[in-house]
Amino acid sequence: VALARALAPGPRLLMLDEPLGALDRNLRRALLDELMEIFNRLTTPLLYVTHDHEEALAVADRVAVMRAGRLEAVASPSELWQRPPTEFVARFLGFANILEGEVADGRAQTAIGTFDTPAQTSGPTKLLIRPDAFRQSPDGHVAAIVRSRTFRGDHTLLKVDASGAGASKSPALLEVEWRWNPIPHIGEGIRLAVDPTGIVLLP
Image (cartoon, rainbow, N blue to C red; front, side, top):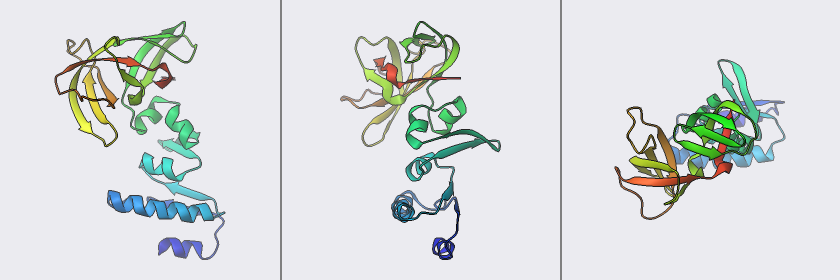
């Protein structure tokens, strides 16, 4: 009803502030589909405010991520998701696999191994390894122990300890999208390879 009232006078700008925030997941998805149909018919610019990054990526042509009242990033949804420009944006989008590293000659050295990188920069940096960049590989140079697993429909999200297969007192916990059978058990050791196209160098 509020949206209909806002549209009726033909405004030059429409602002929605957390329009789906109080809804359960299924109702939110259904209403988001209806809103998308309405928005696609409108020629009115739309400013849509939300804390839900999935909602923002679904509805927007351009996404602006704000931090302490300042713009941290402005990009298309696909650009933002594939290549978050800063650690803050990466963590806001839900990425947890961020490691300290040293890059030289297209290789990044980290606490869990050395990886090829798509960029040819050099010096200290931080690396984001996307959860879908990991591959099951008996010859993979990342050894890890499974600490938890969560069924996510098309994959199982594993949280693994990659700090020398659990030997370190400060575990390097990583998130891995596991899409193969069998699914490893908690406490089981696995070996992983990393697709370099799933590595993002962060400033």
